[in-house]
Image 1 (tube, rainbow, N blue to C red):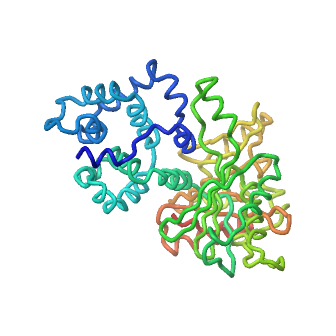
Image 2 (cartoon, one colour; image 1 turned 90 degrees about the vertical axis):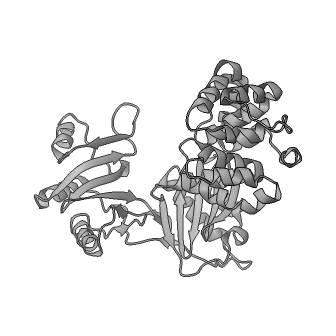
Image 3 (cartoon, rainbow, N blue to C red; image 1 turned 180 degrees about the vertical axis):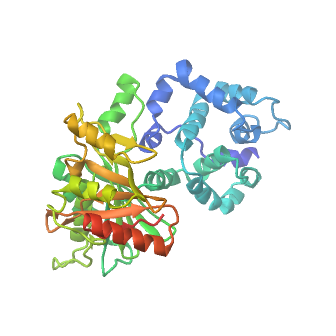
Length: 413
């Protein structure tokens, strides 16, 4: 066992951890005052079993037949032998918090052969149980640490509505290899921010290109101000057959990324090999000049229809905060009351991210998107609901077309 573990690298690489949004400098600089106790509490919880600490403990106890009786004693021994081993344990825990298990399981399941080659199969088999989330991350860290970048990107996209959806009649056989990412970065750099091609990979036949917005100032503040690193500012391009989905901080950035992809796919003669266009029906930039009237029409159309929620990217309140208003029934009276107080949340459709509509006893979320074509910002609608039938979808799409003037595109989960 000793020789096997000696061949597996375990290191507290601050640069790597910061790259995947773990505040490594904060952890190191505040270890004795804060993070050591955090790790102790985590290890003492039922989430962790002794077996998950054993690969670290065995590095300096290779010949011991028995493990210490308590996890706390194992952790103390690890910390006393090499403080950075303990700090790496905490970094793995920090990274894994709130990450989707499906992605952790996916990359763990790919490592059985590697675990056997490294004589770690005993641990691999023990950690295969569904509840051994931390142990799975330990194995990924020991055998294929760069896959944490894949997990971060996939988790970033999970459950989010793409900020731009486009389709192309032609497809690239391998966007990762064929696209000139510098052309995409040139388009994104229009707001004077720095962008870098951060990571590319394939997951279940979809190709991902992840671009990171410049956040050096946040990373440097970890040293000077002990500030936890904020969530990554990522722009993720996801290619699925003829579809291109872009996840970004804003729809404007996502649309620039689509433009960048079209220019990045140009051949030597300047002809684009693919042309991604906004997916679904679109309307002109002035389509929602009477947005409030259209929304009120939804509410007034039928007793079985209610506007029950609205989400705003920004509001007319001081500081322009994001706002969500939810109700068990119609919120239109509340919106009208706010309007009388000179706080009309329906005045500017640019600020509205989504509407939730109760239609025929089923809730639907309708998202307002601003795709671009030839430099013009258009309007498009997407919607989601939990497992509607084809008949329910068709009826709702017809209703929204009649009320808002655009056929919405269904968001598949």
